[in-house]
Image 1 (cartoon, rainbow, N blue to C red):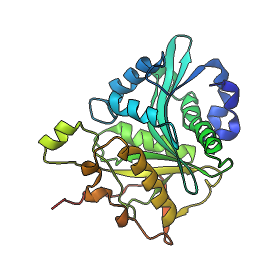
Image 2: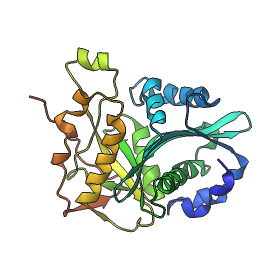
Image 3: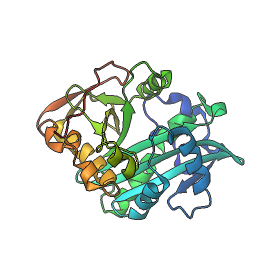
Image 4: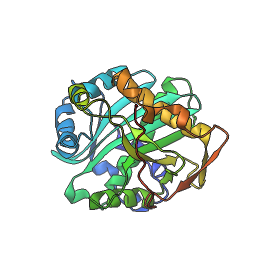
Length: 279
């Protein structure tokens, strides 16, 4: 990716510090195939950070997602300074009726580049992927919404609170989880899911940046439904239908299209929902 495409207008309202960091000092790679020479390096870095806790899909799942490459585009973005990894993230742009949804998966910034402003560029760069898929699907200029699934801050890990604060300072907002009780599908290997008696979706909340509409503090239920449907489209392409059929993932439980749902600060403490049982 040409660093010249990373312009300050892509940054979130609170990412002013990132505007003082010149992205041209890094080499940028958009990895869209397992055959890419940087795939193993980038994926290994993400797996070391997130793999042990089943917080990232397996190599095989992500390889299959890369092969979709139609109305859904998954990529790993790698920023290097010389031969060293400065940051790596992965995300999926999904074309759907009404705009492009970009699922922000994982972000890892090397210790020496934390608090430098690089994280802001890593959050902003996926907008370029969204615009690319919009042009490819004949909808240039459509709306772009960046979406992250975030763990509830239960006090067990200070990093959870720090991540929420980082997105809050950037200007992201949280879809009120008391109204939208979102769950992430079970990332565990199928054999582990079966041995435990079935899928166990995890409660997460959704933080969003509606590019160009960051000042709005509510969102229509129909737009929330579009976001969640896009995420299910992404996951459902590789996850088993029986695991995606868990009641916690039922779109029918979402608010009505005409309802208005509050957008609140990501750090606002909210209770953790219990996934509904299959029984």
